Image 1: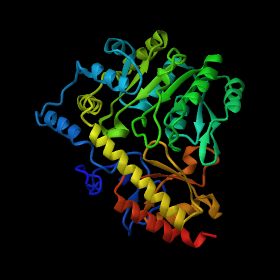
Image 2: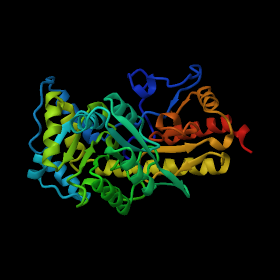
Image 3: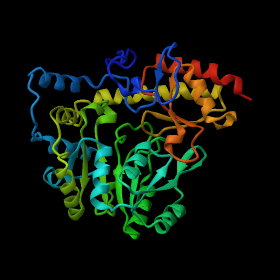
Length: 396
């Protein structure tokens, strides 16, 4: 039996949680709410992190914070355990703090590209990639992943052709991939890097889900020998340890010229200094003291994947599930039911279920939904029973 709180969850209603407060489509307010869309967990964070934050909070002074002296040593050790050797001294030179990964991406694009430049990323894609690129007046180029035998793969011929035809300046990689949960193989990463290098394309690698590994090992793009001079890697403990509200991330850029331009923009916006509680959360998360909690959390999520997969295969086989190799996000295809996206929303909404709508992840994914499964097994079973009630009549 776990000593951590995964089965018994605190009530988040009334806490100004975005996931619990916002309705992306009409929801029946007369039934229990089941919000499983925004990518944060329903689990309390690791107790070690909670204790560290509480100790600082109890002092009652929430002034400006300096970067902890041991932060670089801690992150250097954390990366080393994952196969990326960056010494403490080197990390001090090549690391830049950011309030979040998306903020960091926008800073990088502002620093290294011009209005109208083409930025490519793979679809289905994390919705904020669209918003970030379009929000600073750059052009979105979609490189669609191809599903083969249930696995989302890269069409490398199309990948390179789009880079050439669209004059792509930056490739925005999500690794592990959101929403499919794909962990790219070393060979795939190397091929993407080689193509980008051949055509002078910068890589921004969003690796925020890299610690939530279910079946495969993750390789940091920036750790590849051929990648370090063209790659900026974005990392954060927020998804893994459920601390996005602390707003702390960082980037690693080993190219001196690019890093100088990025830091110029970040410092001008005064967003590269970190915050009191952000520092505490990041430092504690990466210290190694949370490893037992993370191990049990991942095992619990694996159990949720198994529970959902077996139920869907036996009771609702028309729903096609992508088996995630990482993340707590499940990518589900409802297209075999032959009903519209609006009808799917209505069937879910009448039962209080909120999933991410597929249309937010790119063109051609209207009949997909993303299911955040980082919740209790009791809640998962409740949602599955409601899905059965909603979609069983449409099974053929």
